Image (tube, rainbow, N blue to C red; front, side, top):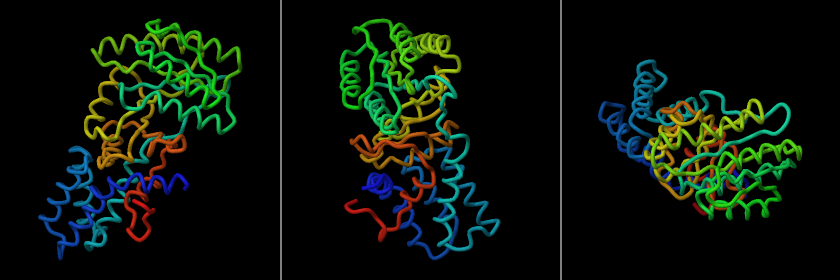
Length: 312
């Protein structure tokens, strides 16, 4: 099964909660009227698109009706498809790479969102492209995180730099940057602690890591990727808002889309935070994390039943 087929399958619950709910709504009306628009708004909110993004989409629909882009009930879903693609494609969603030397990807996020597993899958992706990968185990507050990263290193053929549990994360990062330069590494993936006791502690720790990375490899980190769990819905946006205050997040990795009906949050995250979604995860397998493409996502989300991947 190719990734697009896995994406279609993984978005099954979201499709039921999102696009098929809109289809059922439209079938119940003979004409476009204010009641339909109100119910459409409620449907979008229920699908975890978020208040602000729902307002944006409903305003676009009203404008589309006024300007005759929407002339009939059959025009509503294609219009929404176009608007959602427009939202998701806004900004630069390309994956930044270093022109010379190691490309450093700093990965952040709370515990439980799949951060360390995401790093392992990123390692597998880049190793599959023939690149050398080094993992920096800078989440030193959990021995399990170090052990888990070491397992991924062995599994994917990546090198790893680690210290003991409780060590200074910045010291791990320093050693990793030195090793990356000495060994001519292509990709460095830096794991970080997911603690959220206080925003100030989070900011201080990340700022120290940033200083070390930038001093040792000018221009790095090239990406700061925030891992969010799609199943948490609007809470994912709250987490993102906190982390963006602590770090210059350049992209979102949205995990666990396959296990939730709240995949509509994908649109809300992009719209509200103005941060591109760069990777999505739709399953447990190594192959189930891939770069995000807005058109593919929307095509899978608005899938016609007769084209659906089996089994949904």
